[in-house]
Image (cartoon, rainbow, N blue to C red):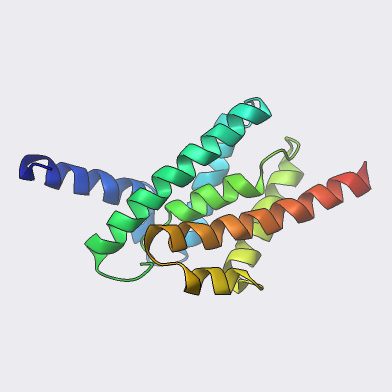
Length: 158
């Protein structure tokens, strides 16, 4: 790649990886990343399930790439500035969940709990995989845990 494109590409990677620079906030950057995920959910939740899952796959793939590059640019393993994984993880948490403020609030809080406490095997996933894949997978796993719990509640409620 030409050096001419290196700096603008790095700026774009940092912009995306930090959730439009929200990852630089001094307190709870992951929570703000999850809030960005909620905002994006409002935009894409009207998609058919197939298109929603395609968007998730594309975001995950992009997230692996930009998180890997951003980790190298920050020269720190899974820098707290990188919050693209929280954005994608929240969208996994909300996949195929009914639209409604109660579901969104529950999804947000459950996702944050799973992401912060990292129950088994999330912590192992985080340690086993390096780079962008590791950064993304632990949050996707937290999103899957959240989604399973929300789907169970949904089935129970009706």
